[in-house]
Image (tube, rainbow, N blue to C red; front, side):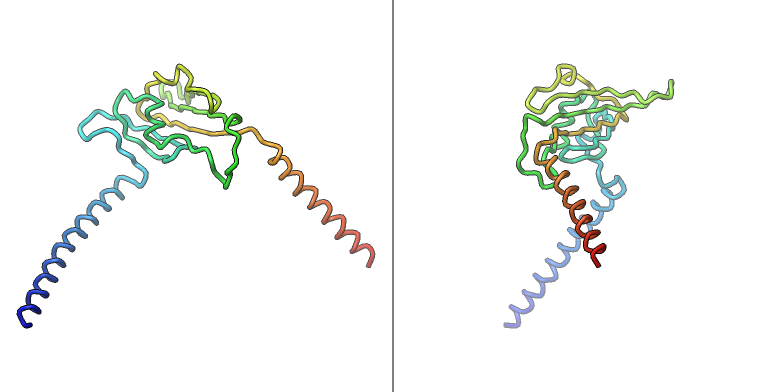
Length: 179
């Protein structure tokens, strides 16, 4: 029994030492990630020439991406998790009414201008031909917006709440005047 207790304590101490090494290594990895920032995503392999671009808007994972030189816009959209189409509890969408707008912003320091390239297309259409071969450059910002045309239900939601507010105000004023 005494040998069993000694063996159990030895195993416990061994596991405790091993676990502390893992915890220390995990804390080191987290501290390195913190120094790099929370939303930097490395696509390029270490040692590979890379461009740094920002992706904002309606994508699966927005942030700053370190991408291999020569990456196209369609590849970057795939890297960022694709288009995010459903938000705000919308579950019944008419996909034929969805429009995608993609803007590529780049600052031209020689002319002090913000140069913007844009691509617009409907959701059920394929990417515009120019977008397939559009090669990204360093320090560009890509903004993706998924829009949809308002449906009858959207208009009804606006009008119903307005009519309800007006009717409540009329009833309240009528009751105050009858006092």
